[in-house]
Amino acid sequence: MALIESLEAALGQLTLIVGLDEAVIAGPPRAGEAIDIPPDPDAIRDHVRFDEQGGYRPLSGLRNLPGGWQARFTSLETFSAAIDAVYPLAQRHAAQFEAGTLQVTSLDEVFARQTGRYRVAADLSARGREAARGLLCGACVRTPVWAVGGGVPPGGIPCPEPCSILLALCREAALWQSDPPCPSPADPDVPFANFEEPGNQLREAYLRATGVAREQ
Ligand code: SF4
Image 1 (cartoon, rainbow, N blue to C red):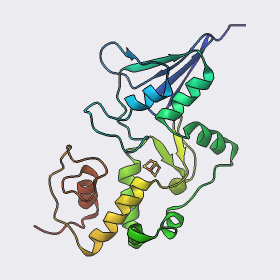
Image 2 (cartoon, rainbow, N blue to C red):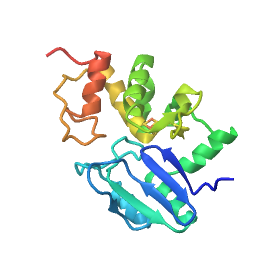
Image 3 (cartoon, protein in one colour):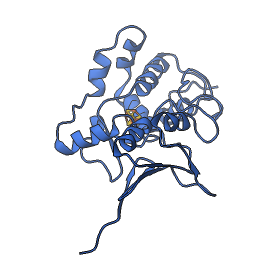
Image 4 (spheres, rainbow, N blue to C red):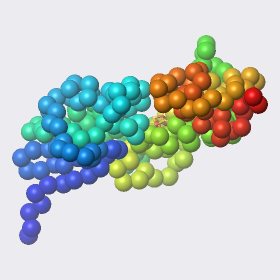
């Protein structure tokens, strides 16, 4: 019988390799030789906090992990903790999804528990909710099983509940319904989750997709 020397799997944008003597986490490929990061979950968390252009990543699942790095582990416990540092709760949610025990919360349920400034998010139309989900979740490696049900693609990570960034986008979009802003050119220098700021890429994409922007 042939001996399997290593197992390789994708998780989001990571490649995970478990061999007989060591386990490896590798970031997305990039030209040139990969740099080695110490096998320390904190060091890895710090490394993936920013994208390749130095922009802060406010959402762990965003498809803009820096590339060209790897970390080698001799402890499977530390290996697992390092995966959690990149994609918090992904392993647990994947296992629960597989076992059919993942607790899923809908967008309506998340809206219903809001108070204060996020309460208005519930006023967002069905079309607006769909556009916000499509744009934001489309930029994320997690699969929003709270919205789409069904399966998760290989290497995918089930997302059981709308995240705070989606809630923030829905809040702004609900306000735009009654007070449509003017469209602006998309500006990659505007931080990813600053939806109130003209030029924010998701804001401008949403205004274009839904046609709610005010005529100039
Ligand atoms: S709600 Fe969408 S964007 Fe937010 S974590 Fe889940 S899949 Fe990603």
